[in-house]
Length: 198
Image 1 (tube, one colour):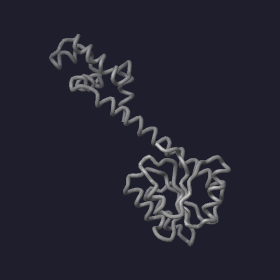
Image 2: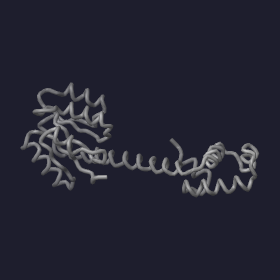
Image 3: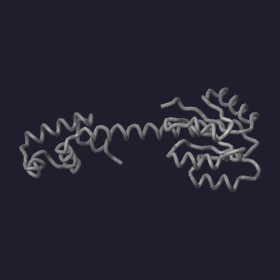
Image 4: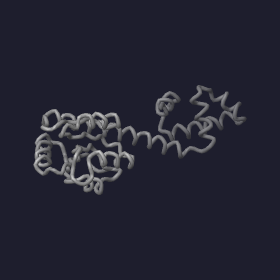
């Protein structure tokens, strides 16, 4: 994964430079792009942090860029910068999943704080996704029998009941259960249940 940054996308050099300076002075890593196209060509699924996106730019608009990111299944939080009486449009983008919007002229400190909040949200979402991927990877290592036993353990059934239901010996259940717990990196049925909670 790339290191998290605030990705500043604005075709106005002065605004872009001022934002980069503001964020650098607050210790927030950032990268600047002079168009939606240049940002999208640099974007990859591992791009992390947040996007600060001017709504109206020459070439592709901020809204079109936002739609492109959604089509690419990007979960990056997006903060729109608006002017020209675009507030109704900005409110509409919030309904479509944007993180926030700010009207120009900007309140620097409020914007910097929201950028930090957006970056923190992105970090939490990525950690949760990585954790879910890790659990799914562990489940994929289980044999068919270990999965059957896992399902019965999660129903709260004891080894003897599991052995009877699957028509196998209790010793076999114990071996599979030990392997299952080992692969899932848990010590108890309660830990297993907590790990697999949606």
